[in-house]
Image (cartoon, rainbow, N blue to C red; front, side, top):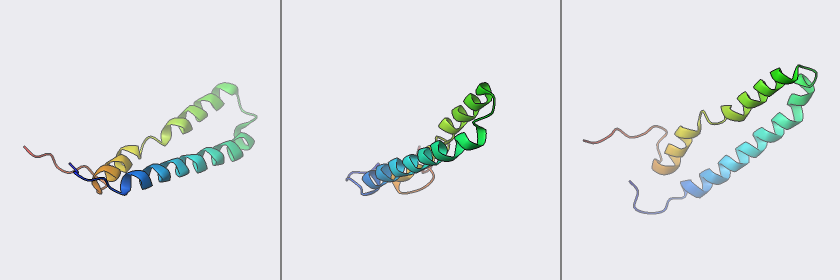
Length: 77
């Protein structure tokens, strides 16, 4: 547990917002040209997948913001 504020939290939040903004712009800019003619149901599945895939690395990123390490520290008994 940390007792003092750390620079990682505001920097991490700004980095996360910037990364999501870039990710969203790239998806919105390039994906419709690739799958725009496909069946609407297939497009929906792809957009749902891409809308959720960014959550995969989020746990490690939040752990880094809180502890400064990319993996959770071992639990103490």
